[in-house]
Amino acid sequence: MSPSLVITCGTEPKRGSATPLDVVSHFFGALAQPFGFFKPSKGLLSELNLSRGVYSLLTSSDHFEFESVQHLAQALSDLDSIAIALNHMDSEEFAIWCGLGKSDARIHLLQLVYEMQQARIRAQGAQLQLDFTHNLPSTKALFRSLTQLALVGVACDSWQLQRAWSTSNRESLSKKWASKYESIRVFSASGVLLEREGLKFVFRVKWNGVGACKPAVGLVRNQLVVDVGGVRRFLELPAACSRMEPGSVLLSKNKFEIDFVVKESEWPRS
Amino acid sequence: MSEDNKDKKPTSDLGSWLNSMGAPVSITELMPSEITGLDIAPLLTMLGGVGIKSGVRGAHTGGSNVDEIRWLPIVRSQQPQE
Image (cartoon, rainbow over the protein chains, first blue to last red):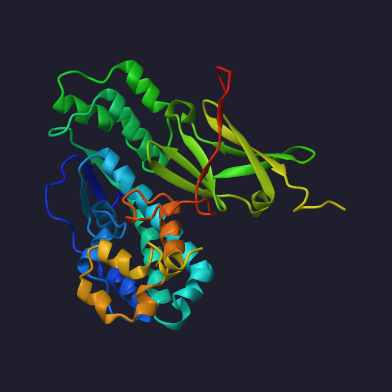
């Protein structure tokens, strides 16, 4: 089955900012009502995190255009970040604070989160086309942005990449470069918690080629954050991790492991 | 705390934030002061804390909180092949 969505990187026309989607407008409109005003201004909406790329991903268009591979990766990263913030909004005291349950805001909130999930699924299954005609990055920058794309779950076919590169550049990508790139797989964003000894655990995440990506790894609430040059992917940790103290990250060629030590004060054993 | 400081509104109040985001002053003038004076720091921190790149301006409110990413030290494995 051929993918219904085509994403072209490197051909985005220079236009003004996109019009906010109805669902976004409805959401912020309903959220704002308990404060006593009807709708945030257009200026406010356009500044509220939703970069132009994120707007594009949320539309039902069959063809998206991004300025570069990096722009696509950043838009998907922002999409995930916003979805996590919105999920927190739905699950916490903030929901009470803003009167989420008393208006249609929650319906719009959940609809927006659903739209974001669907947008991610569509993007991951899309046919990716690269065009280096107007913007030819260095091979180092290209490797970085393709790594970021792999982090957010989008694959780029090596043969298609080589062809696009050769079309815009007389020289081919070197065999060494191609070999290094082909060693990196799309990040599946899954991991497993393993017991090492006594009160020590390790959360193991497999990602082929991660050692070459030089990621930063962090935690926010119950989410593991993997960051490559500002592009991020989130991975929900097992609930047990919230009662453990994280240590360092051991980074290998095809995996990384985070040390966790049980906080005995929070998890007493009888 | 001095009397002056007591009366100071938080810098992250809803009215100031709306204006800084480009909302017309006329909108905030229509809103009751108890609404425009709401401290929305928790919301801004939450949105900023998960690392939204294009970010909410003024999201940096200082201090530590549960929504800040705690970056972990990385140790590279010495094993050449795995």
